[in-house]
Structures are given as structure tokens and as C-alpha cells.
Image (cartoon, rainbow, N blue to C red; front, top):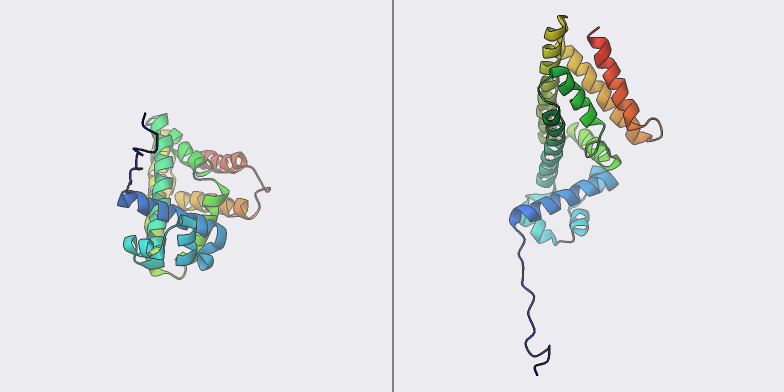
Length: 207
């Protein structure tokens, strides 16, 4: 009778796909940004968090600046996808879509302590890094245009005249301010209150 050790099965070596490794490194970078801020997020810290060698990080990214840029793109896509998901659930009614965008801004996976800390780090970096600044402008311009288009659509339905660009600017500033306030003091309000404050703004806008 053969013993179990006579024909041991060797574990199969599974090589992770490059995109999987890139995602793991980006997610480790985001965790580091949330915990240590940009200044404390070094290549060594990222590698330690991801449990990989510096050589592997350099194989997939051109250093810290490159992986931070990719991390910003990842966060932007995450926000866009969560917003799009809620909008698709409620149909094509403009006011419902506008309210869904507000709800997305105050709901997971967007509205979490970690994600808001990451955004604060990226916003600070945008002040001094031209590439991040450009990404930030592109993202916010697209986001504000989406809101302005919905405001225009609702205004047409209600037959009121509104400066949609200015209203979109005010609404995004209100949301960003609430994000910052909650990140600094999570006891200041609950997410539902932040959402309600923005919905109140929309309600007054069309009356």
C-alpha cells in the first residue's frame, strides 16, 4: 500500500496576471495615502503594504509619481462607477438622477473615512503637482458638467430659468465641504444629514 508521501502532489504555481498585480499595488498605495498622507507614502512603505519587492513595483510603474497618478485614476473611476450604478437603477427621470448623484456622494463605497482621507491627500497634492492638478481639473469639470446637464433638464421640466453652471459649482462645493468637515470630525453629522443638506439645496434651486 502506497504511503501518502510516496507520490506527493506538488502545489501548482499560479502567476498573477499583470493587471491583478497592478491593482494590488494601487490599492496598497491608496491605503498608504489614507494612513500616512502623501509625504509618508514612500515607495518602501507601498511595497511593505503590498508585500512585494521594490523591483516588482518598478516593473509595473515608473516610481512613486506614476503609481500616484494611477491611484487618482482608480479613485475617479470608482466614484464614476458608483454614481453610474445608482443612476442606472432609477431610470431616466432627470431629478431622480440628480438626487442619485447626491446619494452616491454620501454612500459607500465613496463616502468612507478611508476614501475621504485619500481624496484630501490627492487634493493637497494637486496644488503642487501639475499632472495631478490636470487630472483633478479634468475629473471635476466632467463631474460638474454632468450635474449642470441634469439641472438644465430639471429646469426645463419645471419651466424655470437657472444658471446651471453656477448651480453645479455651488452644489459640488457644498458636497466637497461636507466631505472635508466629516473627514475632520465624523461626529459632526451623519452621512444622511450631508445628503439631506444637498437635497435641500436642490429643492430650493427649483422653487
